[in-house]
Image 1 (cartoon, rainbow, N blue to C red):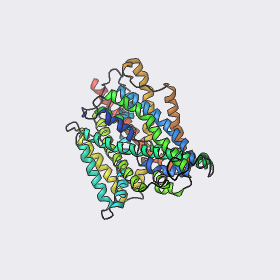
Image 2 (cartoon, rainbow, N blue to C red):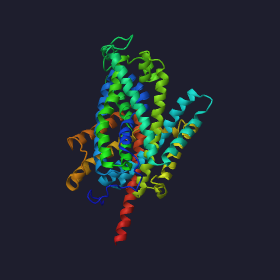
Image 3 (cartoon, one colour):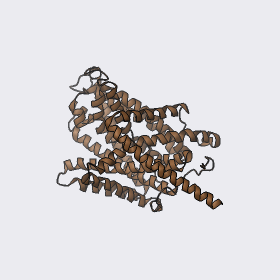
Image 4 (cartoon, rainbow, N blue to C red):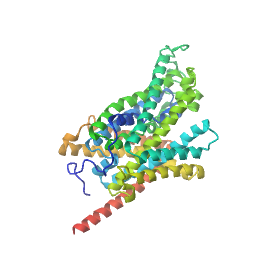
Length: 468
């Protein structure tokens, strides 16, 4: 297998995209990219399973995500590319790896666009019941498709303000929560540790409950990859991604772990409202904050719309990068004013198809799609770690000046991250619900790997024949 050396590889393995993103865009994309409905709503079920130990679950998964983001930041700063980890995996492991990582991630993002559209439509339908949900989904799809068809700076501006609103909401929540914990809010008493140690203790459902919370928290962190995809279209890719990665990691940890700590300190984990309303709404209602439910519904809607926008963007750039490297149909690689518009349209249409399948075949095809994307993010993280393990040594030997961001304690923490991912895979295999997702994701990954290997061998055969 012929490998391209770090020294010989082009610094940007993509077609000339636009460069309209500024540092403020990258910083907000890095912070806002992982703050989605999974945190605002999905964490309620995780708390119901893990109890106060959800703090530990989010801390463990947060540590793993920080390691992954640091590794990805190292490679992205050394070689900014809109194909991000797919490009890095191809350079480190071969074209089959880039093909597998890239198309599996594209599939994940497109299905996620559909899911987020459904979620956003349900919220707005509750406010305007006279308009059917499918009409709202169509409107959102058209809106963000149009946004992504225009210059990349439009995507950056949308994400900047979306992320700013989400971050402001969480900061306010943490501030109010801290005042309540200290007993400084009117008509509130400091709860102390009663909710953390009462109602069955810190780990009321034992290790099994912690495992369920851990798995939920791992997938809630998904979205960090977008900033390294976007960095290739920024004014100063190397400096931009380096700064975004460095500042985002500890802030994300505060947002996630801090939020969970506030919720389980102020409310009993057994409260039915936590799972029914979502932890944020339940906590604000408990504190007597007027209009908390509607305020958080607006924030959740923004989180869903932000994710739709970012996922259409990420899917189109990943598809474009794959095509430019000969890993997909050429039509998806056509650029217009620096924007891969055919890739944007294709990604949006596939997302809308997923929405239609949720209406037509909710019990079989749509459920199959949901199960298939269940563990893709873990597959992507595995490729990131494996690629960083190989590329770091090459970079140190051939181009040490490109190591603007460095993985901590290399290679030991990379091995720790790989062991953490393997542990999550094993834990998924233990749980019945996640076991099904593991099987479906594994099937898709093996299929893509097989296709990637065949394509690689055919390309090598043609290259050998041409030389002869």
